[in-house]
Every structure is written in structure tokens, then in C-alpha cells.
Image (cartoon, rainbow, N blue to C red):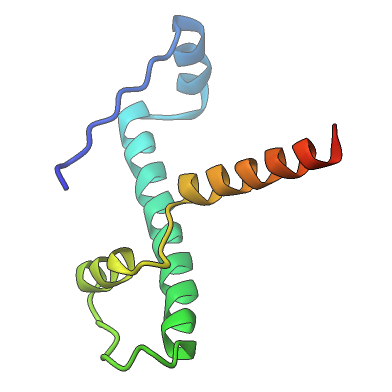
Length: 102
């Protein structure tokens, strides 16, 4: 996967508001993103370590480094991204609503 560059657009007013609290907007944004990635990694690692340990069909060692762990998990047929999970839930809700006539 290639590196992802994100662009944030802020109005002059929004910039002024943020500059009231922050020394460096870019540094703050980078730190916020790093924190989000670290927290998402902790949740992913915890969730999938438990799933792998409870999967009787999985007998391989669980990788100790982040890149190999993510590669293993995302290659599994039971792995879904957050968007895929939400889309499936929305589809199930729509189907249930259709059946109930609402």
C-alpha cells in the first residue's frame, strides 16, 4: 500500500481559532494522527489476538511485529474493514425494514 497524504482545509476563522490554542497546527495534526493510529493498533491487536487464539483452525504462530500481524489478519477471509462492517449492518437493517414494511 502506498503512503497516503491527506489534506485538511480550514477556513481563516477555523485557523484563527486553532492558533488560539495550538503552537503549530501541522505538528498537532501529525501528533493527533499518530495517536489515533496507535490506539487503533492496540484495539486491532487485542481483538485479533483473541480471535486467533480462539480459532481452532488456526495453528500458526502469531507474528510479534506489527507489519506481519496486520498482513496475517487482513488476509483472513473473516477480516472486514470498519466500512465493510458498517455497510453490512446497514444492508441488514434495510432488509429487515423492508420485511417489516417500514
